[in-house]
Each structure stands twice: as structure tokens, then as C-alpha cells.
Image 1 (cartoon, rainbow, N blue to C red):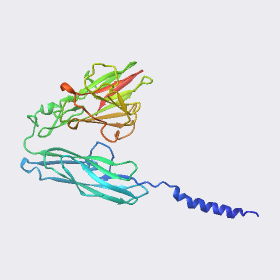
Image 2 (cartoon, rainbow, N blue to C red; image 1 turned 60 degrees about the horizontal axis):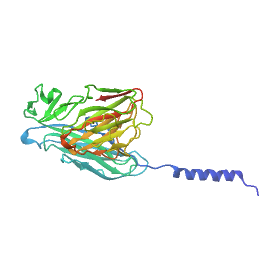
Image 3 (cartoon, one colour; image 1 turned 180 degrees about the vertical axis):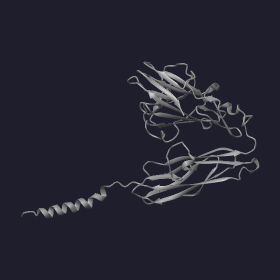
Image 4 (tube, rainbow, N blue to C red; image 1 turned 120 degrees about the vertical axis):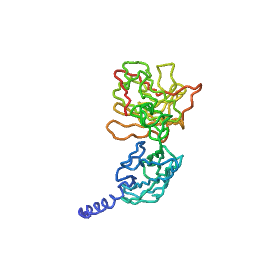
Length: 357
């Protein structure tokens, strides 16, 4: 019996058309905007342009609670499958912020919902909170920060100095509220007392042809009330084959100036070649490798003894947090020793590291 070729071809085409819809991958995707501007997940940056910076309120001492600010964010499912938002919560130890319109539930593709957050100025100074949105988006929880500032309208003083005095905030910042300094670039500390420099006073550290690790010492981070955020850009890097590359982190002043940061006790490093974290001479899987042109953000939350890292890859606009949370919980050094920012490198040519704003 001869097969009818036209009938066979027709059946084959019907089968292909029927199969095609089932080979498409269906995924939900969460995107967030504020003031019609994008909000980036896992970024520590805040901006009034996208509502993550709520701005400033001004109150007299007797009316600290008078002002409130409300901001609405739009959550949109830009994927091609239902987005299930299972939980929205705030990590806000001081309870400055409150969710007043929740967006938990299911969003169909291209559907949006509003998330409204209220800030209440119940005390003076800076207020921070992290917004955490759990969903079935394969990228994991969407996390971003919000900030607000409440300024006392009486005569301001920062650590005993009037706000308009040239010596307020050590002459390296602006007194925004009582004992609240906003520091100029490359200075930090609650009173802007710490210059972000290498130990020789420069912004740039250089090395070349060191066959064992050389350690560079950064600023002393001894203010127990400060959250330090320091950025180091890798301008050039030729590492010795088989070395750990760079290790960036914190530690007490080392007596041995030729080891990778993390090889000793009271040292906490992040390795460039593997993205592993390194402490007490033990390696642990953590983040992604980094290289020339990348900028590393080191965030040391001294009040909570937490050390975190983020990486801005060369040519990209945003920092990406490394790991699923802080890299380390820092053990307070014995005998009153201070922690310093440290960097070690085994260089096989030209290596250069610069503090940036």
C-alpha cells in the first residue's frame, strides 16, 4: 500500500503546532517601581527619585511625632505565569515604617498591585528599614531599603558643636540633626572622624612582583555606633598563578604582613579568584569571583557586628549583594584591639586598588 505523502505531512504539521505551546517556559517575574522609576533588588542605595528615600521631616522637640510621609510602590508581574506574593515584611528594629497597603496575593502576567509604606517621625535622626518580598519568582526574595530623616528645628548641635560652626562634624561633614553628621566623600564615623585612606595616607595602593602576599592596611573601624560602607575599585591586577588573588576584609593589625586575609584568627576575608569567604584559615562557599574593573563594597555594621559584601561588575550600574545575608558575624577582638580594613594580594606584575566614592 502506498502511503499518501500529503496526509503524512499534514499530520506532522498538526503535531508540531500542537506541541509548540508546551515547550515554552513559563516563569513569573517581579518588578517594582516607585514614582515610575525602577527599584533595584538587593541594592543598598536609596533615592528620592524612586521613593526609597522618603526625604526629610522637620519637627520641634515637643512635636516629634507630628509628621508622617507615605510612599506607594507598584509591584508588577512582567513574566508569563502567575506571580504568587506570599509575604511582604519590614526589617525595622525601631519601628519607623509600617505597611499600610499590602500587595500580598496572586498577580497574573502584566498585572500590578500597590504597596504603600508609611514613615512616622517618632524620634529624631535617620531611619532605615529593609523591605523583603517573598514570592515564587525564581530570582528569590526581592529586597530593598527605605530611608527617612527627621530633623529637630531647634538650634542643632553635633557632639557639643553648633551646626553652623566650621568645626562641626570635625569640619568634614554637615550637622543634620543633634549628633547626626553627614560626612563628605571618603570620610566616615559618627563624627566624620575617620578618613578612608590606606595607612600611608593615599587613596591608591600599588604592588608589583610580590611572590608572597603583601598586606595593605586601611582605616581603623573602631566607632561602635557606625555602619561603615567603603568601596574599593580594582584598577589593575596581575596575580601570581595559583594564588588566592585578592582577599579583602577586616582584621586586627597583623604582625605577619605576608598572608592572605582570613588565614589568621580575627580576620575575615573575601577571595577574588573563587568568591569564597576566608576566616580562621577556613574557606566557605559564599559569592562570585571578581576581577579588574570591578568595585567591591564592604559594609561593616559595627552596632550589630555584621560584615557584608556587594560587587559592582565593570560596566554595570548596580552593586549585587554577595551571599544570602551577612558574610560574617564579627567576634569582638580581645584586649581592646581595633578592627582595620585589610587587603592582601600576591601580585605578579601590576596591581592597583583605589578607594572610590
